[in-house]
Length: 249
Image (cartoon, rainbow, N blue to C red; front, side, top):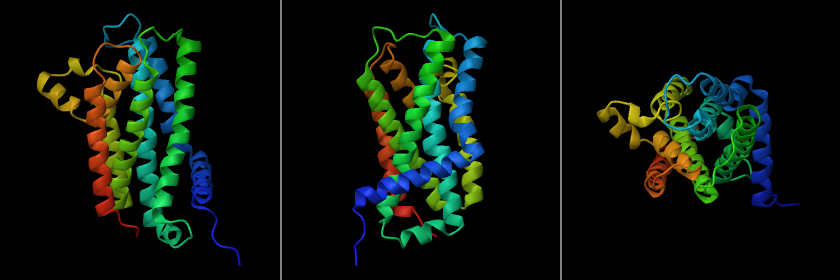
């Protein structure tokens, strides 16, 4: 009798299944692929708020990439996992040869794959439709670090909600926080345009820190270390809390 397949192969197979399930959910495709592109095109064409840059796309492209990461790693992953737990899917998968840690790794791997598509589409739209070109100050290593840390952090936050709350509560809270991140996370409105007290709070939150790090990576002035550390701190805290509180049924 053959034993179980190697862990890596099982994780990849489960990640493939997660991707197929994501592709079948129209609401997921809207939030992860359509909405960031629509916001990029709309606010680049109708700049309702001055960003202080020569072209609005210089500000909006990193912001919408950050929003795409939040939509996939936090909203999509959190809500889908919460309903899988509610329907008993996680319990059944937990009894399969794939370890529970491998299942969570597959989910995060699928999130990363979706984000590659998101970033590719957003950059392509910015280049083709909006005439964006990378400036000489772009630092690919900072952009990559921001994407990786942002994925880890918001996936951990999504799993934290999914493993601790009922599915309906996760749905409501994830969507409410997504709107908050959109408005106060530096996506379409610079954080420094907020009231001072609100701006100080926003800079300590992971959404604004992620968009700040992405903009610095794309060539804006500033030190990327501080926002990257803020994102990482949120990620570590969320991952530790998830490990302690996640319920499989």
